[in-house]
Length: 172
Image (tube, one colour):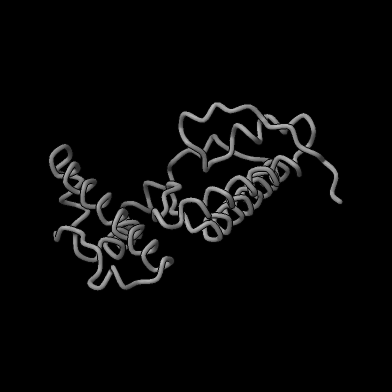
């Protein structure tokens, strides 16, 4: 495995391309660390994760007559969900995906990465945009949710314990 590196010409990339390159670099680092720890702690897992055509091999094994015969004799799964519960799970997932998409667009507009970091030259702009987005989220929240919306904002310092500032709910 090769050590992850930022791409050649990283310094000449646009801010968005730099952000994407840093995120890719961090993911590759995480994968390298995961693989290294897996190799040290779970050799069998590492051995099988390096099997050529792993997906094809897994499907072939699942279709083997012995496996099929075993599955037929198994008891039904004890976990089941009503159609209402299934729909609720789909609705919750759609709401989660919508929220994740909104946060992604906010990050992109502010020029920050997944962890809230940005280039030094973009810091003041990102800080002002962040406060604006945070206040807008509070403004659009129900009265009883405003304090929680302020405290739960994802792009704030870890030690930020500030209280919800006073603001006007007037739209005009």
